[in-house]
Length: 119
Image (cartoon, rainbow, N blue to C red; front, side, top):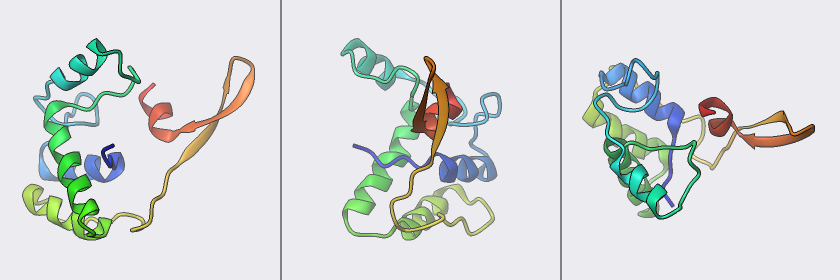
């Protein structure tokens, strides 16, 4: 799969002038053809949709990580395109995920923060 870093990307796009200001995340002038095609194949989750332009960022990040670059170096390379005006750093070069505990159907359940935020 693709390595998606929504917090880093939101800061990078915002400071670099490419954020979808109406949504507060994702790229401006975004299309969702890949998401629509995945849905046509029955691939989800439906709540999570990367835009077509956003996919390029995640593909580049995933390729660079696969080539052995740490996330901090990958972020620096991506920022060279966006010129955010700051040195943007991930919280760690290690894999880190944030989960939140929510009540669902009368039970406490841990879900990924991105699912919580988007839903």
